[in-house]
Amino acid sequence: MAFFSSFKSTFFIWFLVLSSCGNNDKVHHTEGATAVQAKDSVIPLPVTVGANRTKLYLEELKDKKVGVVANQTSVIFKDSEKEPSYVHLVDSLLSLNVQVQKVFAPEHGFRGAADAGEKVQDGTDPKTGLPLISLYGKNRKPTADQLKDLDIVIFDIQDVGVRFYTYIATLQLVMEACAESKKPIIVLDRPNPNGHYVDGPTMEKKHKGFLGLQEIPLVYGMTIGEYATMINEEGWLEGGKKANLKVIPLENWTYETVYSLPIRPSPNLPNDKSINLYPSLGLFEGTNVNAGRGTEFQFQRYGASFLDSTQYSFSYVPMPNFGSKHPKEEGKKCFGKDLSQIPTKNEVSLHWVIDAYMNSGDKSNIFITSGFTKHAGTETLQKQIEDGMTEEEIKKTWQPQLEAFKKIRAKYLRY
Image: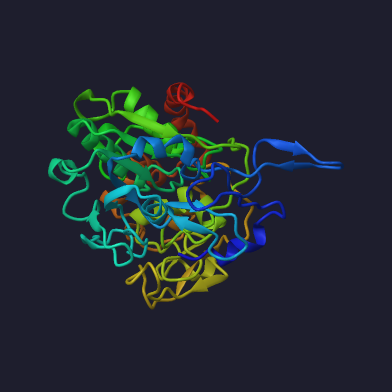
């Protein structure tokens, strides 16, 4: 998948790509956490993603039959000024004579083109001829039969640090399957673009599902490698099992590092702004309000035909497009707000969900109760909004659970 066109203008002049396609331990882009001193300035070192640190995991794959859990973000960055300046992990491993046997694909598929919620079919990758096994179709967890001919599994998917983003659920189920089949698993770590804070309502046990398998906050502030370690060490796998887990860590990245994702992690997260607003506007997924799907500003605006048009100067009409074949309010004039130019958020904001609720003529139009509860992880949030509580009052009720989670989280932070 191509670089985000909207990201190009944000890249720093020190954006460097230092890795070859599979045999170099250095790489990649944006403002790093560690710096080298130049004559008149400090130049940040480039961030190295886990996939690029091949010296730390290639030996583990030697003479092994390998399964890879991957999508379009599973790339190794190359030392090249050409676009795209990366190679897919699967292609790189094959070029190094690693015996990749099959690929497991999460929501949106191996190439990342399927709509949210759209079932992904098993098949064959036309480029490599490898079997593709969907983990967002008939089964969401690899079966023992699917793993029996493998010696080891590699998991490499870019996460965005939001509980209802389904890749962490896929991670847990893959780890469970590997633990049950006694297959080692290697997780290649990647930065979390929403890793700089912890916020939001905490999942309640009775509402666990594929939009949240664990009782964690909406935004949990960990990389996918750190989260994998927490799953394993906290005994969260089925039956308290532990996976034979190895995490390949990042280099030159901390939670203060500015990092733009060079590949959209899913069809409706096209740029930095959408990823930053996703924890807040993603709550609209459990309502009848459109959150920008069917436009080129997904998760950067919201609106609906049933919102009070006198309260909004902004409107738009959602239409089918890439990643949204049938958007909410398709073909209807939606009244709402454009958020594409607001400053970066460092919290989950309830302002816009409350605004939409207050400006709906028929308030029963807003919430799809089961869907909103699944995204929020609790029935309480909907009730608090309906009862007229302010954002500040609601967020105060989150604090005890957030503080309890932060104590657990602290044990597994490594950056």
